Length: 97
Image (cartoon, rainbow, N blue to C red; front, side, top):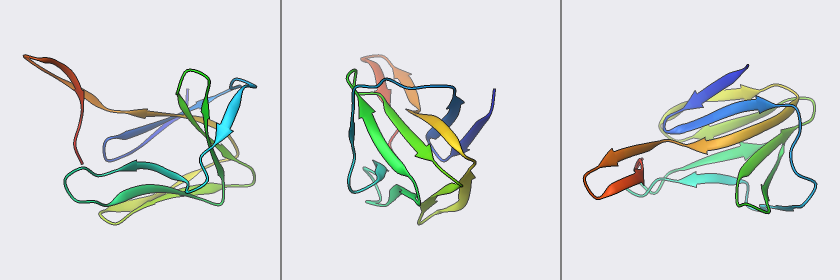
């Protein structure tokens, strides 16, 4: 399994994704609630499947940029995008960047 992380975002290389998907035109993987910065896909295609899960498609190499993190490269293929969560007494919530 190949994984990469940038801040609170995890990228896991997968073999396939759903055929039923819609493209995310602005290519923003996640906005930082605290800073307003964003994790953004460059030179790739970002899409959501019918369950709302996010995937990045890299053909020939894509990369993720963020104002406070080093750039990470995504080799060719399909990458599932997962936002880190944390538990608090009221339940699970996404980590605020």
